[in-house]
Image 1 (cartoon, rainbow, N blue to C red):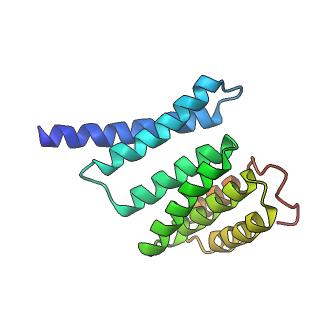
Image 2 (image 1 turned 30 degrees about the vertical axis):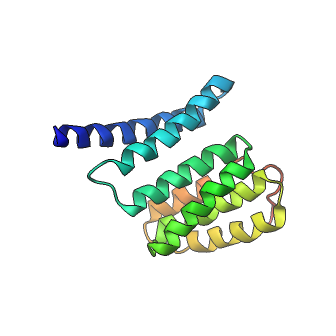
Length: 160
């Protein structure tokens, strides 16, 4: 029973993560889609936390995804709260490479959604610097593609 429950939690965590990304990429999302996207991101983290394969990096990445969803929806206060949790986990767990770059990126995006360009720019530059240290070329390319994608709510300066 426990083994099956663990498999279920892991399956739901992965499935809800994919569903979140599917909605993030959807053109013309509805308000219902946005509500589902939030629920899926929160649900994904919930199920990761109950999986036997759960590690602190799952918590960090789950908080990143939740922050990202709220930033995309221009809900800056919620985005920043989850971005700060993401950064706290990153620092407390000494996460590096890909994860530190994305932690800075989500704080930058949260500040952009709050209309705070100075704080956004500082975090963006930290994200860019951390991104340059990502070891795997494919991960580095993915990170920079994500970093330069919208929304930045007109806070991002072209020289970044």
